[in-house]
Length: 310
Image (cartoon, rainbow, N blue to C red; front, side, top):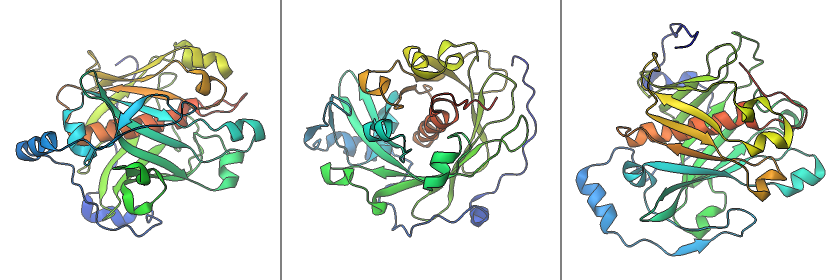
């Protein structure tokens, strides 16, 4: 890769060592869904009647979508997803940083939009308002949404729990990391690292066994990364997905999309993720988590803040 030499990572803990990570703050019940699908399960899913269609207010998304029963079954069939951050107009007027909230939708020309997860940040008010988003500590639950009532916050709907520790990053020191655990058991689901790579952002994705699955790489000379303030929202930013360190041919991408009106007047953003053709459902979910981490590292900065971590 252009100027990047991989550095061996320390041994990554397996599932029976997951207690080394910070304790998940809530006691979650057993998750009703797994992440591996069989042909029979997929066929059963296709034969199920799709629940009612609902519409969120246009201030949020402005498009029609449906609920589903099993997001991992849907991911097995999905070629891409859309991540939409909820605009926070009160935050824009008051200047007080509020917890972020995201909604993840699968999409296809044949079936339209289907909601997969609702994601809400849990963090301290002091860190949200005093530290750059790229450094602050937070927890986040990826909650399953099977009906309109599940749009309300409910830890019992949590499938994956994310933890991003506080990191005072400086060049190769204190590099950012995102840790994902199954909410029901606390076992490791995966991990995302952001190694030091000079100006060009790079992320490395690991599965529950510590195996490196993907590299995410972006050229720094993109207007959406170079510009600050509202101007940066007028440009797409592309993070390419690679299977190996040579990064010769991308097999997918994560795209920060051009802002709509609600996103233009707030700090909300949208991301389109186009999955690799051979990606498994758990790998696709790991890429979705990476999309959330990218938002904090590069696009959540306030006016005049530099969220870039190199």
